[in-house]
Length: 604
Image 1 (cartoon, rainbow, N blue to C red):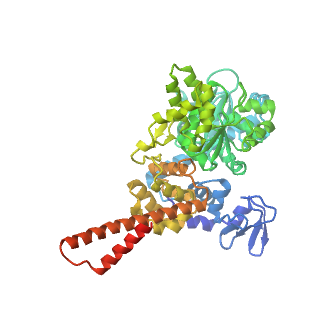
Image 2 (tube, rainbow, N blue to C red):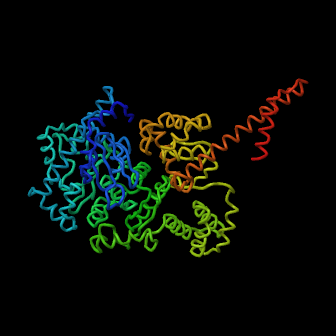
Image 3 (cartoon, rainbow, N blue to C red):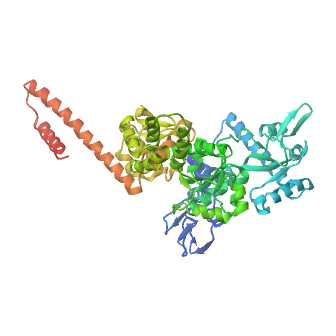
């Protein structure tokens, strides 16, 4: 979505920054300013200032600053477009001019949001107050789901009859044909009937607050255990995460997000105090979900069930999460346990204790590469393969890591495979020298053999992708370096176009979401940017801080200058040679420039 500057100005004009921030931060008046404790870093002395008359905030402790849009981005961990949408909805502003076709689509989506909201409130009322919800209330009590959790997650119950929700939707004026598009009702020979019946209802919310889907958990015996919303105009399976809207703030505090498989696993963890938990809403992660996670954190902890299906889902999820540049650890549970049963049998405090030890490295949590190596070792053991084949396969896996870690994991894997560490070291000679191996869509990719950037991938860590990674991660550097790096320097046309657009809009770019907002209407470019930004956080391209990024850009510009001097030297050399061969005098200025360039080359 491209947002007109005029619309942005309208949103800022209609939003009282003091009132908005004051609703989430305790502020007191000091002169013309409002002052309070900064919500972005821990402090005891107020250093957070809001200037309602000038429309911005500033923290003198951590340097967080900006307008109300920037505050929403930082506080709610939202991208630029989502922050704009939230504020626009609050201010009653339409984000963009729409043609009739676009307006119809938007109108249909808003109507589905309304239908879902009516359904969620109906299901919640039945669970909490109606006699029909007694069976579901007993079920929640038996599973240890508290009334606070029922309220927080807006859990509900679909009564075990054909017309409970249908009647409610009609009473609220919701068109049943549209409700069918939302997945709430079905149409039969005698008319519409409820899709969900006799189930505990778990609504999924978008990070902007709308109800977008439902999961219905069967109470009692029968199949299927869960009925879930399929694709609708507002929901696509594999693009959303359950409870991300709640967990993203806790993720800022904890520094990571815990990923579980099921709705009730997630609810149990939140109830146990693990408020940075989300559920994948499926058997394995997708690239879209991984990109959503990266908006909230760079670190994830996978805690799927310990059975075979859960282990397989973990393995697939690791590939996608690592490919998106996320740091991944796995927290295994005892055999037969899932997060829900673990919290209710052993308590949330024990689960939190296991999580808290991750940073100290004295926990059962294991790095993703150890998990992958263990699974591969099991596969290799089960096969009929020679020692040489085993060594080669193990070495390929080890070499997906930074070089400094290779020998550590060789030493780890060798005794379990029944081979000598030296066999693995020798195996490296049988793997194409110079090939960089990295994780892709569930497989190893030899990026040296990739000849161009593909949408959604980074084919090689060239200076072009490195520069874009820097500018996406820290857009303020575009204003500092944009005039010194011309778009024409980029050899890859697609990257040149991306950079040119970013450079043109440098004045409006503050944080990564602003860059993504420039290309929100181009899926291929958005995917490429996400991959490039992921590379900057991974082992492919990594910069410790702003100064490291500046140092890289300075070296790049120095190389440009050296290349330009070399090219000019060759041009002068050719001109002077042609003049000599023609018997014509060489102008003094050419000789002087040639000598100066030669001296610079020699010195370099």
